[in-house]
Length: 359
Ligand SMILES: *Cc1c(COP(=O)(O)O)cnc(C)c1O
Image (cartoon, rainbow, N blue to C red; front, side):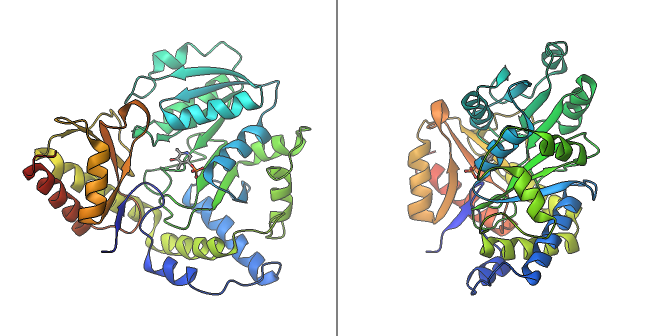
């Protein structure tokens, strides 16, 4: 039985992506390949609504490397950073900053909650120069309000860095309008490509800030990525295969229209949430992304058994959770090449598990 992924990443790939990934890759230090990279850069900027003078660094790495690259290239030891921590990915920003011995303040949120304006208010006069946030905290399924966080950053004059990895293409995202200075994305979430490529997109002001930094890095030196991208290239061998997949997907997305892409994900999420209303689940989040629904099991604490049964007996892979909610929660992705019919297949499996007394 071919497995159907309801994960958050990697996800079900589109037919075109699979076709491309089966082909011979070209040599990449060529004008033809530079043109592909240039087109990717243009289309990425379009998809996140940022100006033509913003810059894009394409990294051959997982999303975490792009998080680290943003942190260590934009900031230094003179900065004071506020990190909004709602779960595992927020803590990852904290861990990265601690490795660099940065001066940080942590706004720890209650599970399932978004930051309130009162909470943010407390950080107003503390000399914060940068704010780091995972706009969709994928570990718990909470989507923060990018616009109001952007306003806050603008007000206090802080550089606003957003990890949009699991929200980009699933939720509205207006980089310039929301005062976002840097955006981090990666290939294996809503882009639905192979894992292995990530990107940092910065506005022109942040680009200039990076180019003036005197701290030095090697593989993650964004200055080198920006310099090379002026000729459509990368400093090191890039993930050539994923580049071709990315080019194809972005062309597709731009021709469908970004609003339509987001809307179809929203429809899948709404459909799923409607259909589980009769099942013994609750949704422990006060603000959901279209990308994913976190579900808490009301009657049992056997999430890993349900995960295994869905996989083995129904050919369905959902996203497990970690930490203290490992047995209490599962996460259902709505991104990638899935349909309303696929939702029905998952719902039927849940109903079956319920009839068997497992849910
Ligand atoms: C998936 C994800 C990442 C990236 O993780 P990698 O495993 O390094 O690709 C980072 N942040 C968020 C919010 C994510 O959902």
